[in-house]
Length: 221
Ligand code: 5RP
Image (tube, rainbow, N blue to C red):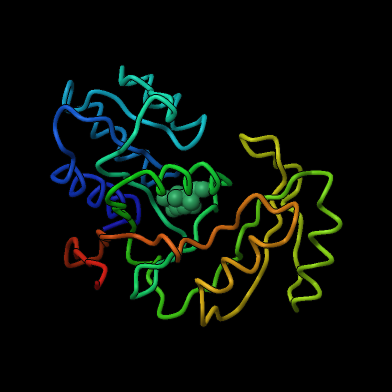
């Protein structure tokens, strides 16, 4: 199976967890795009969706799915989203597509976070890919210096501007032994909106697509 077929398989598998007649949270990225296409094919299954990015909102709308403002919703039964890396405890690095802040907000409101990913995203320890940090533009230099003082080498993600009008610093961390601590530490730098570690609120369930099918991982209590 190709990587795209694996992404499609996990997107399809996630459909069984979508409660009919509800408003759900929807993440961002190529795997999530397959999930949106599945939602579109299941016409009328959900009442609407909260989008974690403008790209997701546009794709949902193209499928005729109502895009709901998060402020009009008290709770989301689930959110379904991809990941750049996921570890055995279901902590993740996200934000490869730069949508980390809105993804984290949607995840915070969702009762159950379902991560969908192909097996290449599975790691023993997070840190193989760069950790995105969303930064208010005027704070970029300060945040860079603070990250360097922590021993990291941040690099500005070109001319990329997030849906929130901010910048992304990508930080190579190598091995993230304590993702919850690092998440809080980086978020504590003034000018950081949030970083792409999803450890304090990780996934509750992960559907991982590999050559032998879809494996379901549950977060241990
Ligand atoms: C976007 C994300 C994505 O979920 C993550 O980058 C995975 O994307 P893909 O499904 O395309 O591999 O966090 O901000």
